[in-house]
Image (tube, rainbow, N blue to C red; front, side, top):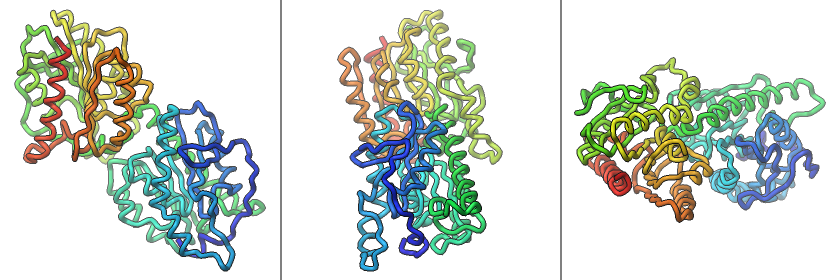
Length: 487
């Protein structure tokens, strides 16, 4: 990031606090602006000039006015780039690597989540663009925008896991238009998340923050990029906030082969107004409801699991709570945003409740529920409900769920998590386990399975012995939990 464009035209900084305030968050001094009650937060990562840049704080205030909580951290810890001829540029750049900036941002994200924020995006400018691109590969944020980024590579782009926009300048020695287009093509080849690349004509590296306020054209070009950034976050994080359970691209990877010929030993029935796969002894007094991920109730591995659990004496119901409208990665016209809006987990929870009444009417006396990914979020909501009689729950690699929903769980619950999960780091899973164990009236169990990724219990390859073994271990733990609590 030693190109001259990064270092030209330094803005004189001002300590005017504007409408926000200086606070410590995640161990880092930050300029924070916007509503403390917002569930959506943005982190702005500065250029080498630092977080005091007036135009950056002005932009933060403007974005906060749109309803976001905006955090501008001092990831350079007061050690900003100097234009003194004696300044050791190379030493400074080695000290302030983008990888370190990425790691130092993660405690800020954790602090925001602890405040109840459910959707977090990050925007980075120049040096900060490199930091944010790395964050987009870490799974810790839900959306990213990199504005005239410095030092991003094809390897960085390969690691991106969340919706990302790259806003570049026509005149940029470090990331020229042709190179930016190549990065855009690489992003476009990853259908599991949205991406957007735009090259702004007639502007140079740094134009979004280093403009002359008296130059109407420069101001207009900067504001155009500001608006595109805001629109990107508004659209992506609104969807994330509304259906936050599906914020991780891992939720959409490795779709099952619905034409595998595996149909299971059960049959299709309507139960509680919902078409369902039903397997097991119909005179059983014990029933389990298994709620699918985004790929639906026809997934062969899910039906095989239902049959296996039914062999232990349970009546097992796998409802089609997506009503035949499953996530379709193969269709280039598939409207992901519309799908997410149509299939919120609040609706899934309400649509599942009649199943409990229908099972009770058949003489069932004890019911448990397990959910996978999207279905895991539904089951947490069911476990919070006071208007159904559920004896126990098992949550397998769920989508993101606010801490307050975990704290409201009312039945014995087991949380089975992957070591490699964009939705939950092992540390986060352990925090949830501690929260649950702090409720002595509630029996709980949290297990993190080593070497597996989100979705491993139902999206494994049947010819991969290691994957099958890991999935079966979780299946066994789930079954034991239900045998102990649903009786």
